Image 1: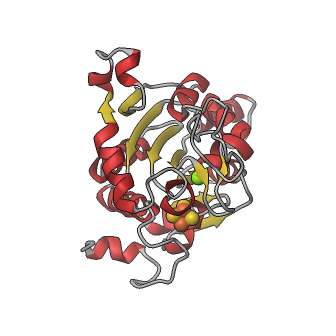
Image 2: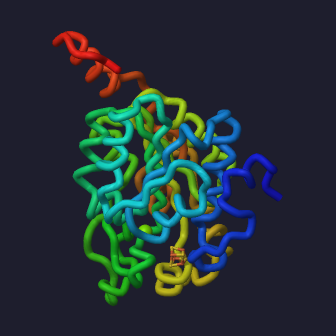
Length: 274
Ligand code: SF4
Ligand code: MG
């Protein structure tokens, strides 16, 4: 049973929502809310932005300052919000297609800019809402509406992409590890800089049914059985890592933060920081 504080962040206790029963997105939303409650965040100082997709419906269910924007562009909106009011805690929730296809450019440039925003990427390896088309994270060989013989393309590794593009915090968990999600989201929100938490989740209706994991529990068990912590993974061979989901914190470093630099520049040229 969620705590009263977590329930307070939900728009109503028994709200109607569009997620299929058993969808992984609810696990992620609950972990996010626990993290925000634990960090003592206030609703009126917390902004949750999203683009389009099943995962992007999340802000509609949360009682904070929320922003449901266009497909792939939520990081551009979130950047504007943060620049306009740097005191706000800004969190962007995205799906894998939203983040790495339509919004791919926004994502890599937010990473290199290192603006103080937390991106939570819900990676279910498919476009769930629009009918199960392959996304840039659909594993090679997996089936999708647009790949009835299996996907040929090599998928993106979201964490490697974020690390390579310059994010100051990068971590991955799965929905089989709700406490890890909560811990990484807390670390990400506390980080001064661009922080990415990838959460591997399931779309049992669109991806699962085509790939022999039709029930939520099939997916949770799959994630549990195939996840390996990064410290253990570093001692494994590429063959042993085949098909494994490496979880853990990959990047946690201090880098110059964009807004701080921007404000310093304004001051330097004689402007008003306020
Ligand atoms: Fe979740 Fe997939 Fe249903 Fe969307 S279509 S709510 S991602 S299970
Ligand atoms: Mg998706």
